[in-house]
Image (cartoon, rainbow, N blue to C red; front, side, top):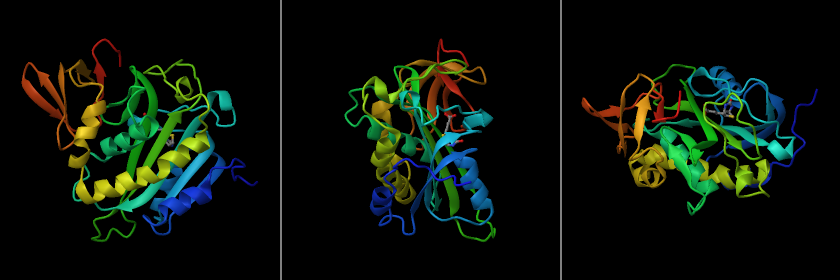
Length: 272
Ligand code: BTN
C-alpha cells in the first residue's frame, strides 16, 4: 500500500530553503506512521543518518517525554488538526546542554514572532500559552552505528503542534491551539514557516551553544518569578534559566540548578 501523504506539504520549497544549510536534506511526508521519532531512531540504528524531515498526517503510537504517549489529532480533520514531524540530522556541538531550549525558542518565535499572543516557554521545552500547552518537543539522540571516535550524534527532534481546537481530556496540561489566534493556519503552512528557521537554530546551537539563546528564552520564560514544584517534591521560587540551560530554583536549601530533564516542574497549584 502506498503510504505517501496526498497533502501538499510544500516539500520542494522547504527542501530548497534548507538544503544550502544542510546538504542532502530531504522532506518526506507519509499518511500514517507509528511515530515520526520512532521511525527516524529506527533508521539511525540501522545506519541511516541522512538529514531528513519526516512529517505525517497521523501517528498510531506518538511518543511524548518521559515515556508518556502523545495523542495528536488526525491532520485529515482540519478542525482539530495537529502538525506532527521530526527533524533528523547529525550534530557535533561541544556541549549538548540547552539544545531542547534553543529548539523551543525557534518554535515559539516562529509561531508568535512579536510575542503578542503570549506564546511562552516552559522549561525545558514545552511551548505554552496562558498555562496551556500548544507544542510538545521530544529530542532523542543515537550514537554513530560504527561506534567510532566521531563526536557527532544523530539527533531526532520531534515536534507536535496543536493547530485546531482540541479537548483536554486526559492531558496533564490543558491544550492551547493555533486557531485561537490564527484561524486560517494549516499544518503544511506552519511546517513551511518553521522548517528553515528550526534547522538554522540547530546549526547555530551546534556552533555557539545555548548562551546566545539565553536572553531570548528569558523573554518568553513562563516559570521565572513563579513558585514551582518539582516532581521530586522540592518547592521553591523559579529564578529563570542559567546560561548553561539549567533551571534555577531558590529553595529553603539554597539555589538549585536543575539540569535533568527527567525532573518535571510545574507552577505551584498545577498538579503533576
Ligand atoms: C511532549 O511534550 O511530551 C513531547 C511531545 C512530542 C510529540 C511529537 S509529535 C512528532 C514526534 N513524534 C512523536 O512520537 N513524538 C514527537
